[in-house]
Image 1 (cartoon, rainbow, N blue to C red):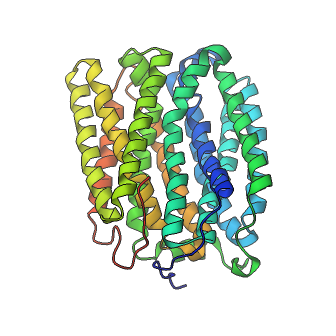
Image 2 (cartoon, rainbow, N blue to C red):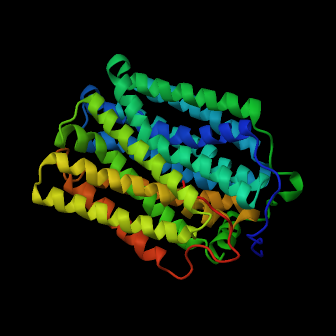
Image 3 (cartoon, rainbow, N blue to C red):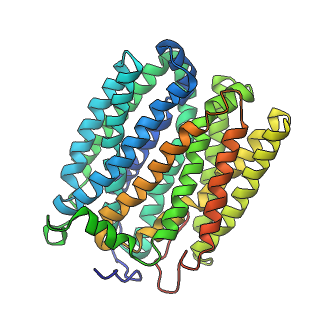
Length: 410
């Protein structure tokens, strides 16, 4: 199947109502991942499980997200975007309620796994909807907004969680996630039309294997996919370790932990805004590589400080720079990758999502191997992700050419 011309541009934009719904779809899964992070210590105490056991609740959700991407993306290429999106939103609400009511760790793990599978629908199909409706600059702008919200949500959610933890507890935080899933369902039912006409859908004869093989063979798709995945892996390593690094190692209070996340969120948003302004005059691939150099320097500083036993107040600045650099990496690399697979947008989006959450599920428990009082292991994991991403970004196939789609940073 030939690759579509990436220079094609739509004259129409995406309506604001649709953009808002798609942005909320991108945000719900990260919020479901991170809103309850401040309650990790309390969750472990109430259920009587270790630090690694608590982090398994995050891993279960990420595994579900990875598997769900592969199911929902190709399915939406066959039956349309709206039916699987509505179904996934309903299941997400039910699984959220089960998580909040879970009496034990096994029940919580099962509910979080199911919620992850269902939550994947919003992320993977949302990216595909944009690719269905618009191309070129209009697609880049819409995708940037959606990815910005999705990128900020996992950083900002713990701030809200830290403020809500005292009055509602960790179960209340999971009920909050359930309420957001319900709002997502309402938004889909009210404002999101079907974006994939019947004549553009794949047939049942087009197997998942053939669709995936077609996408993977597209020149220029794999390098930005890999960079995006590794950048997300770094973010998940930071997020999974943050309750223990900030509260146990650095010694911040619950509110202080939330404020630290808020500062990082502001830095991420600012970096994304600067990236979006630079894209008209600078190749997106170059922006990604520059941000990766900055990110690697910050993570190596984090490793050095943690290994040397430096004063704990020196750790947050290094983390801040590493997180902020993601503002120029995540959106640009994802937009570059999706620009090559518009005719199989659901499958391409599925591979993007599966890769990011599969790696996220791998790194989340790794950061806890050093114990809740260690910052060195998370620092090493973050540095490794950044180093590999920078190496891949220097591949000749990475980035854009004169015929590549216009992209903006997120």
